[in-house]
Length: 272
Ligand SMILES: [Zn+2]
Image 1 (spheres, rainbow, N blue to C red):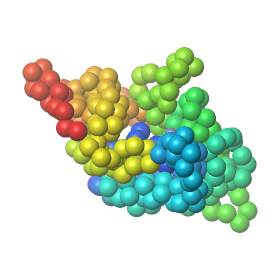
Image 2: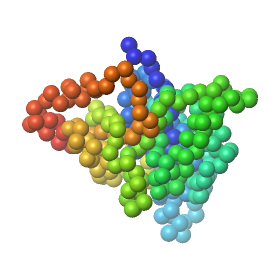
Image 3: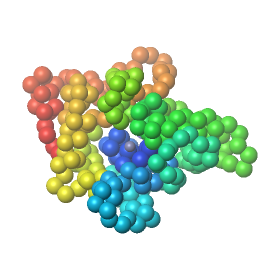
């Protein structure tokens, strides 16, 4: 039996771990792997419903809004079987790499000791995404060093960056558009949909139409189509993997063994 691994997801905003990698996290949790999500910010500045309350001139309770966003992610992660949900609670109005935050992320790496970190593309044009990723890369280096009074040094084996764009502006075109790694999340897409619908502050929930639209577009998009599966999450691995021989995915071979009509019938299922 393959050894169990440890995975840490670092997302810029509370919803990001679920939106970009929730299916993958759910599958690893079900596999008995250690899964932890870390959000350096509290997400207050992007509380969608509160932003609209301001437009209407309503009073808002900032502490309650922060707690609401935190609770939403805890509940969403629980839908996916993920219970280790951590926050650093920093503001997300202006997110810049700060030594204090980098040290705090390094502390979490020292504790969780991830084999794999999942995070945003480090040049994502959403500042909170890019800076969360940049700080994570710096924290990885710090965590691998001797830190007096802290956990023993730990080296992270691999980093997977999200392929899906944060925004669709021209600067985002510098992001690699082709993933190195695609995870079939079809069998957990219902769980992911239920998790996304926990983010009521961001207008998910209700009849689920926002979740369905984004879910079909992002998870059911071009990477899933080319993999001939209904839903997939796509990543770019940071470094080439070492193998004794050229690797070939058994799962990929199994899926490719289907006839073309069988592949299309499988791929075109609309499950959310
Ligand atoms: Zn985000």
